Amino acid sequence: MNQKKESFIGGAMALLVSSIIVKLLGALFKIPLTNLIGDSGMGLFAFAMQFFSLLFVVSAAGLPVAEAHLVSEALALGERERAKTIVKHAVQVFGILALVLSAALAGLSPTLCNLLGEPDAVWCVTAIAPAVFFVTVEAALRGWYQGTGNMVPTAVSQVAEAVGKLAVGLVLAKKMLDAGYGIVGAAVGAVIGVTCGELLAVCYLLWSARRGIRDGLFYRTKYPSALPHLFQLMIPVTLGAAVMTVSGFLDMAVIYRRLPAAGFSAEEIVAAYGAYTGMAMTLFNLPQALSNSVSVSVLPALSAAHACRNAKQERRLVTSSMRLTLLVCLPCGAGLFAFAGPLLHVLFASQPRGIQTAEPLLQLLGIAEPLVGLSAVATSVLQSFGRPDLTVYSMAVACTAKFAVGFYLAGQPEINILAAPIGTLVCYSIMLLMNLISIIRLMHWIPPLFRAIFRPLAASAGMAVISFMLEQRLEQEMALLPAVFLAVLAAVPIYLVLLLAFRALNAEDIQPFPGGKHIARLLRLKS
Image: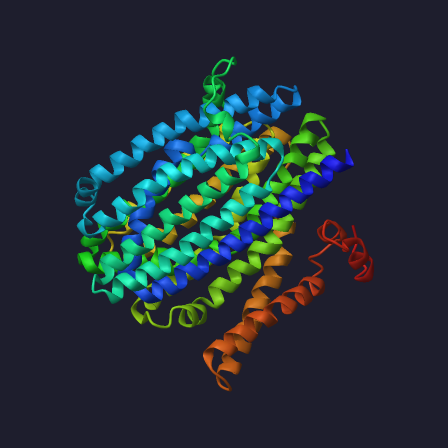
């Protein structure tokens, strides 16, 4: 039992570390790339990536989760050959589907780009097409490893994917720009880097599988096809991912189609969308590696409590997970709101036009940060209760509202691109509210969110004000970069001191961490 627990903790830590590394590598890729190709080039890059995300949802979004469930079930029954058969069918069937989708995307790229009003993105969309095939094969192979409880290959492949994108994409974008191919050619080079990153991840997973299931991918089997069961398990997960991905795709389509009504030219639209995705969204996504780890880790514990009908434990876990999420997301959101301008000027100094566009966008997204984190936790709670269908409904309603708000506001000259983060605020507010209502109905209990929000919110606001004032004072004595760095560094202890001053921490918040019990006793925190 202890060995299994240690294996689970080790796998979870491997995925957490890899997700943080991937987020950092992603920032190291996007920030220099944005400085290199500007907001217009990032608009073309983001345009192609929306097609990639959409087709990935169709081909494999729910595949690793469903496949891992079937593989672990077969291995538990001692049927290793059946487990290999499941992986074989997944790789073959979904690989063929992805190959068809890749070919269709490459062939239809001129039509699709002209239809959406962005003919310059044709080669970007064509360059991303092979990545749909590679990422689907990745998903099938990762399902095997996750099913066996070995998370290390998945973690390493994620890092390999990010490293390949960073190394190839940035170098190729610079070479294309130097060779005279302009912003369009540089954006194509960056997209090719993404495709090469997916290829590198596939190669690593195939190499890693040389002693496992690689040889079994092509042998005849006596076991019947596992595809019906696989599809049955994939549907709820895929629908949830599809709703959010389609939302992002429609967001892009609305901006490209509605901003002309606000007086934007084609070039200004690409630049505005590039500032939103390449600058504001890059910083907005960074804290989510931490908040998502809470939602992932609470699911198995909450599932066990639900299976044992332990209502007290369920309530404790729901409360703790929401408190931890707020303790992380509230200061991150306050920091993004307060430091939007300084951070953008430090990271994207060569793009003054993009910074001007991105600053109010990032401030609005900072307000949305805790909503995103709480929505992820609420989604995990409902999934652990065996009701993923409720999360699909809330996502569908929230994304419909986001689309309607974006469609209406994007055409208003005084709002224009601000419609995108406003739509995000509306989307996650509705999703969180619907999920909380579902949780209350299922548990017959109201989570004490008001108490969990008020004190950390006060500490976060105080931290943002004090650290921003410190940055302004330091900027008078030194350059912008060290001033921002020192102020952000000081924000962490300032936040911790304010949490203690407002009595926003208790022993249960600290104890799960290494040395947590000793720290809780040292600080005399109450349970």
